[in-house]
Amino acid sequence: MLGLGDIGPEAGLPVMEGKAMLFKYLGGVDAVSICLATKDPDEIIRTVRLLEPAFGGINLEDISQPKCFRILDALRGQMGIPVWHDDQQGTATCLLAGLLTALSIVGKDLRHVRLVMIGMGAANVASYRLLTANGADPRAIVACDSKGTLHKGRHDIEEEQARFADKWRVCIESNADGVTGGIAEALRGAEVCIAFSASGPGIIRPEWIKAMAPNAIVFACANPVPEIWPWEAKDAGARIVATGRGDFPNQLNNSLVFPGLFRGALDVRARRITDGMATAVARELARFATERGIHDGDILPRMDEWDAFPRVAAAAGMAAQAEGIARLQRSHSELQAHAAKLMREARETTRVLMREGMIAAPPGP
Image (cartoon, rainbow, N blue to C red; front, top):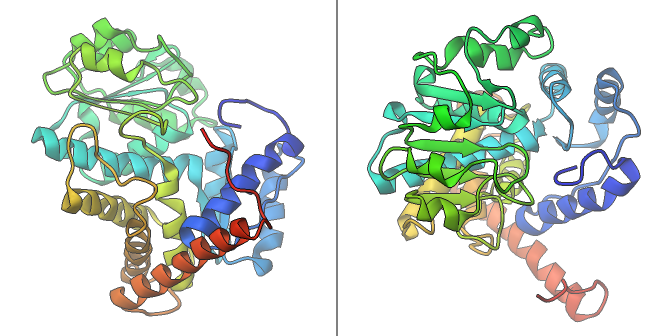
């Protein structure tokens, strides 16, 4: 569980219930919280497959790597409904959206930047895949884990490639210059830093940010404490800084992605959720933010910018149709209008229930 570790299914249930509420409130999607009392990948795969007739889609949550990759790949190949691992795919989608707008602010192109990825768990492995699918040059990416930079000489990963196939692929494809050492060496001259590592602060030091290229972009996304405090990164010369927290500017929040994306997938009865759909959603979020105005401290929509969510749904639904995995065909305007109606009704229902005292209002600050 994010920020809490392995706390067991009973303790994790309230977190899943909160996620189900966000599905409904932001996406108009009815969701059921299910926590499994097993860590065995085969048992998880079998259980999820048995649940397929009762649900329109499955959101996987808080499954450690490397088994999260195996579980997702197996279920995507075996099931006829969308299966999504938000810790991987949702994080990568939100990251791509934020990076697209940040790069536009500093006048750079994803295809031509030197990029460092700190922490190679589920979030950054998925982000690497989505970024390279969208034009990032893997040769210009340097990834770091707890033992240092990833490169072809990392025999510890090579020996475990049966378990860490995705991580070994990063070793093979990336770091064309053969950078060795740790975070300090990786960040020297880099234009973008994307960190999903251990909770900070102090994972990234200010002097390492100072060694980055001018107009550097730093996404320090560890929760509950980022790898470096935003003000430290800014003082060290970073131009744009984002974190995973809502009390700092530029929050990268998966909740911008999964409610609308699932809404769109369900509304066209998509058989799966693809990286192409994730890309369409990321680009739509970036487009929405750009149209209403972006700057160094505001690169993505806020959670209360309700008009963003129907646009995400429509983007996901249209991408599913374009890829031939939708059972229903709907126009962009139909998808957006239908999603907006369901989302508006969900928010209004919640307000009525709070007003009538049937559910408690959220606590104040």
